[in-house]
Image (cartoon, rainbow, N blue to C red; front, side):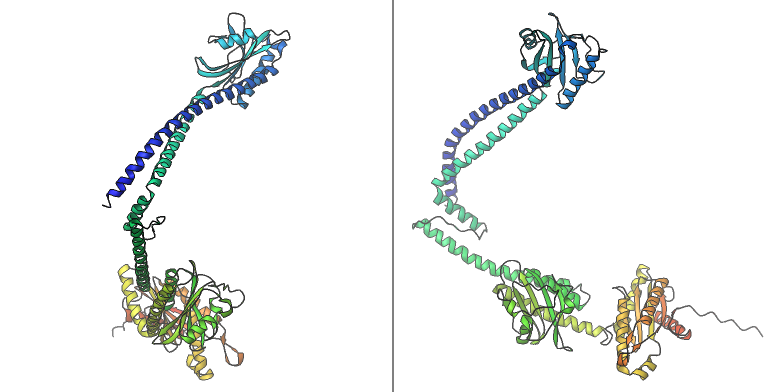
Length: 609
């Protein structure tokens, strides 16, 4: 049954539209033909006026007393005429301008505007003579030929007599324009007329079809609306039908069904979006190299998933008892290190203290903690979520300035789920990082160093690339501890580790080897390059001012040893041994220097005796 209604309405609409449409098409065709004829006549008139005006201009220039005597190209006035006619052609884009005389039998040339060497010489006869030329000479009046044919083609030509003081015609001016332009104008006019006719025809048919559709509007609206809803367009609503009959009841039922489908679809899309976002986060975390990278990835996806302009993660520092800005997405990245918040202070502080999420879509300024000058903080909307691990707060996540309206309950649900995932993932990542890094220096621990060195040497052998190892320790560190105490020694170790990390590439592997001894794995680095890295590090530590007791400055030096695979060793233990031997070579050389491993000289055999 639903298939027959569209056919009925369409047939009726076409019948009505064809009746009125054909009448409209006939009227449009007639109007187009009249317009074409009028445009062609106007073009011819415009062409004639322009050519007659140019002929009149030439007539004013011609010297009546001198023109009758021009019989040769050597005549001085011929040259003047030639130059003037040439300028007329060039300045007015005119293909032909000439002066003729007539002896009663033959028209002959006086001068024309052709380039030198291509002109007709004076007294050259003209073979293509038309009636307009004769009329202009004999009657002494300007004439015009719209389609003058000669050996060179078809021309629009204006003829203008040059008369002396007695009114006698003594020369004839010929100003011609090729009818190629007229042909192009005809073709262009026809194309435009056809386009206009087709457009008006389509418009007429469309108007007639719409008018016919108005007659079957209620039935058409119901059928079309139901079809679009059935096709999946749940934003469609059937409106404009207010009848109380069966069609009106059916419309109401369809609209109610669509509303319910929209609600179900929205809830499903929200859940799919939530799962998709969490999946993308989990996939990207697999390639993250540190806790900061993990946090940055999670925050970025959270802001994108919640359609926010920017966001931030503040982590609680148990040493300072404050929330510190750890990662940002969007604006104020330059001010990240300057933002700290007390628990209970501002929106973030209250969320951390109460462990309850807060969503603010207005009235934010009085509740927001102002930052230091220079840090932008304009906030229109904000969602602040606590990061919980075993019901203990470890930080907060801020999602700021939703790009599309205000934060909704659906956004809060998604944000809460993501915050829980963030906290769990962050805690796992933090525990793993703590397990492989030294608590004092934040360098990799000895166990991680051993695994990493084995892997790098295996990779070096596979791809035939070098890998270098630097071992170094702090000179006289035991004496330093005995003199200034172990706390000062810890400060020196921590500061030296920071200098070490700043001196390396991102993929180099620094580790605390043990006590005051450090190790550095340099992938794809040969001995000369490793020596340069070691020397740069030695100078950086030597020139650094370490804070001493009571405001004094302490100076520290290091001794370094360098060994390279495969130059000095092919096995891990051998490489470590040779780097250690090189380190002790620096000690024996007086400390504060770099030594590259060199194999010991072979012992000389005892003489026979």
